[in-house]
Length: 290
Image 1 (cartoon, one colour):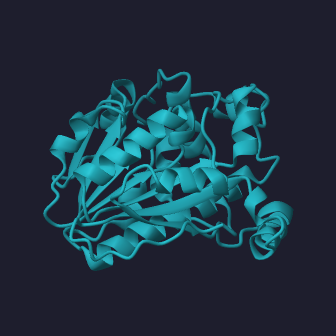
Image 2 (tube, rainbow, N blue to C red):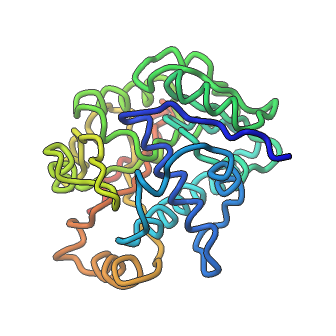
């Protein structure tokens, strides 16, 4: 007998965790999938939620975009764990992301930071390893920083989060991370400023027509320079390229944009890696890409 499915009680920004989960599961079910994520498929099947009514069919290659962005984050975590196999990965606003099961090396420590209602749902749905820790608080609440082991290397990730903060909040969070985690790195994504402006005005919707929560922060070369200057401990800011995907947008248009200097700064999504100096004064300062 099949166990009863779980009904998630999420709305607003936390509900977007269900949309990204749905897109990963949709992509993972395809025979030509760009992302293997059986745990996401398992989660969607375990939830009593109107995914189709809320998020609709994949009209705009949105599952491809989610898959290739996810692959960039996965590759960065794997790269970090090759250098720091016992390191700590801190995932801000992890939602129902299943990255741990895709990239775990059997040794890493994993810290998931999210709002209480999301952490509660995650605990009901996903098994916890002894190397995983869930912290129920906002990413802007510095209490989570006190719970992170800094001794074996730290990587902080923020996927699909920072656009919901004000620019001053983003700069303060990054500066505080630079202060509290010398020698660490941070990987984050942000919509382009033109896209975040549309989101701020309520002009973006899911394929089913449901409005997307407003965004307040976005990225362009000028904002990259501002972020690089948010703290003297930030010694590197690198623009990470997206791999080629599938279809007209992600298989042809965006790879062409990435190769073309005149238009590459108009790409809709930026994924960037920050590196924080270790305080020794030997880290070379580098300019942001773009």
